[in-house]
Image (cartoon, rainbow, N blue to C red; front, side, top):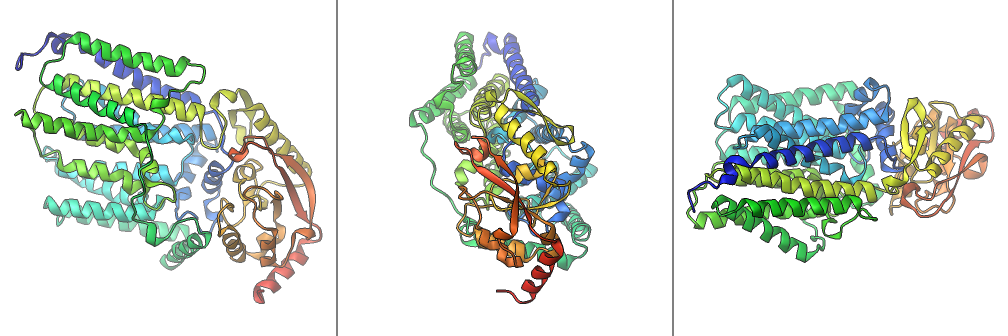
Length: 595
């Protein structure tokens, strides 16, 4: 009967609490366990190079300064990659936890729910790279900014000092967002200004504090990184020019765009929407019998066990993060149904729904990939939008919220299990990483035996050939920043001289043109003839040299999986034939009289 609480709501929600807590603990420990597994030989190497040597690079591509933010933590953890990964995961989870806590979910067990929903933020790491980078810094900074925003605008937040702290959080978050991705910081600022204007809280002391905090931190960054505002501005401007030279799709013209929505399993989409709408509706109307709920849980757990125990560890219907975008859609439909059935709705919280729904786009803007696919990494904000929608229903929501968190956690865990376990970014499946490999700085990772053999052989041969810690390497392979990091060398000009784009050779030439001759004269070369992303050896003419003036010191055979390729390639570590002084003279002369 409507208006009478079923026995289930009063006595049996402990099973919901237990399952949510179980999935939360399982997800966190899953990450802690797998933090020592795998290593990407392209992007992750660029991240590590930048974090390890942020002051080495005058220009930044993509346009980011995240290396300066994470470098102190890299030093604090004694250059330990595993600890850096764990720190990154726990920091993201903690920020997500405090944001969901500020939303103030109406529930008898808010702590359990907060942990459960915060776990969905870890879906960002489904790409398979746990190392800090500019994307995760952007994500973390946006979450911090939203915490500050909620401290200011929430009605129950009457504490003056808490609101001042919130304003500071917005300023710090905005600054960190700029250090991660300036394009995201720009859009975040616009959205916050518009929102505060419409709720009539823009022209307040808190706005002044936020702006002043961001400006002070930005000015400090200018002086600590480049010594002056002018030099810092030159860094950004020149980096933008370099970005355009690469011809990888990063242009002002396509910055604000809405890409084609990728094809998904239409049957599964309908299943998600119908399943959630019917369940939420019945639960809110108190028409749901406890045995029906048990069936839902048994079905969900059965799917999970199938995912974990099946031979291929894979289930097709949970094959795309974009599925989670249909969660807020389902909640909106449920709210409409409830409204027409005369269930009271509190519309105040719904003003924040639009903010949450826009945040994945904020984090994504400037990406050269499909915007929808990239936004799915930030599905946490879609989940928060759903929570805000459900929180607006003026009914007993204990079971509703507990079920919702269980449902989203189930999908999140299965997506994480599939993406990271079976198809991590440009790496083999995690289950093939069954060999303990001792790397530089006492780093111990679980890698494939062939990958570890490649690394150890490269370390031994390079050292035997005379490569010393801190030596510079010009990476003509276009895709080997990680091996440079593992050799304790430094990538010249950029953390990654990236190949494979139409303008890669022009980009690399500009980098060498703006690199000092003192560094170029002493640099080694890593060469991969006819490699899939190799740079042309002609770019060496930028400093008056050519590939024939370099002698092959040693040869590496890459593992089949390196860089995401299904074949091995030969890489040559080369050194200038004659005295560096001759190359230095040629370089200086060539830069005075360029070709």
